Image (cartoon, rainbow, N blue to C red; front, side):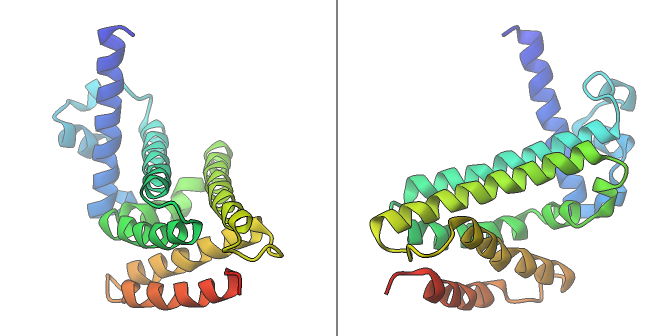
Length: 199
């Protein structure tokens, strides 16, 4: 790989991260070429050498979220062997991730991201389905070792798992951090665990 290409990829990543932080601090409406350029120390015209337009930058932001999301799954799976422990720690990590990066709910719950862009909508759907597939694989591992009920459909369990933290993240976001996510997640996990673990 040439140095020029590498430098371009590094700069694109920096721009995407800067855009992610702008959404985190000011919301998606604040995302503009001028603000992003200022954040990375470039002239707005120089930004167009790396991205066609603001829509392309938003696509790169979504890719960054995807990378970090699956990075959480990978790290939890490396740190914990038992499937039920993996699910529990992954749930906690995701809540912490949303609290640290408020851009996530601001992007995923904004119709500005989807409107008029079916390709982007399809990519987000693909990311979520791939994530659910990763969760379903953990559930299957638990079924094989006997810790998770064998009569449950792994795909259904994965959607239920997603349902543990998505509304929690939304309530925390809408309450400006007032909703006690730690207490809720611990209680929700116990209910979820009671329903899926082998007796």
